[in-house]
Amino acid sequence: MHVLSIPLRTPVKVFPNTRSTWPEGLGQLTSLGMKQMYSLGQRFRTKYVDQLKLLSPTYMAGEIHVRSTSKERTLMSAQVFPAASSKVNLNSNCRASCLVYFLQV
Image (cartoon, one colour):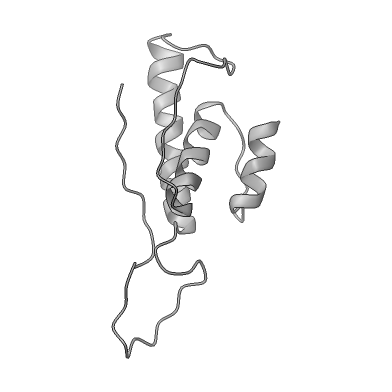
């Protein structure tokens, strides 16, 4: 199965006189974007683990292969999606540092 999703991120470029700022930085995954990826992972789990029983209910190395570019926003998406499909609870204030913790649990 191929999953393609474009979660919410901040702008990559801004006009010179732009007064708005983004705490995440330019071109980064937003908190809402992280929640979107988490929701997508939950829906994936519901369909492919719970309903169709094509994947194990617990993590099994080799069952899922996640690919990403080297950009921080895509790496974060690649961490959040499998965390959700493995029923990891995601703190609403969580950023990259706590994702590593959640994925190791």
